[in-house]
Image 1: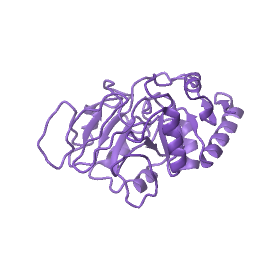
Image 2: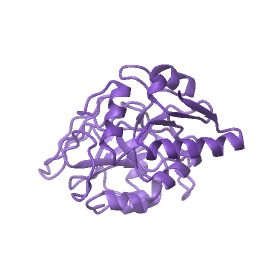
Image 3: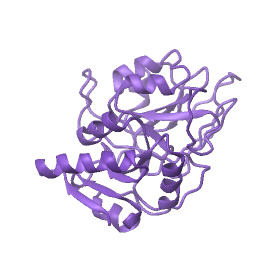
Length: 277
């Protein structure tokens, strides 16, 4: 039977995080709060757990989940190369609503679906989930809803859709923001915005030379450009074109970014590419 914990209560919060960590380490699923919508989490290095995540959501392997990390160091270990802008973007916008797509380290022994050698990484701005991540390590996370249904902004909504397929539900109250994370592809020469979201293109351009979906360029080494739609995002680059399940798994900012003075989220929400919470 699924267990549910109210994170507003200090005792339940502590017990709930311990239960979620244990469940995830045992290859089970947990629903976690994020700075956007609720996310459905599985151990990123357990193919069985990731397969359970796909099954619970009613999705197939063609749309891989986002991988959430608890530290920037973990992201560097998962990516083959952060490229010219990756570290600067991480320093400026993490933790927060920016998902970065890298080429995955070839040494990784995992199976996240049809990633075509890439990985979408994010460090969420939510204390509960960050504490869980620091204990579990990287988690494959999709939005906590069945495919084709609205993103879960409450644990009630997630539990209604996912039921007993999830071992632990952590309730941190209703999500107050519905703006998804901005998704930026760093696999090509020119960083490419795959989904507009909480961080505006103008803010990204203060750190990196970024091209938006509605702009065009001819650099053959850069990602070619179809704009991913909600719940069916596509990441297009010269050597890899993974489609990340961005339906509701990308988080909206519930508070201003704690690093630097760039202020709260800006920009308009578009579709949703990677499948993460």
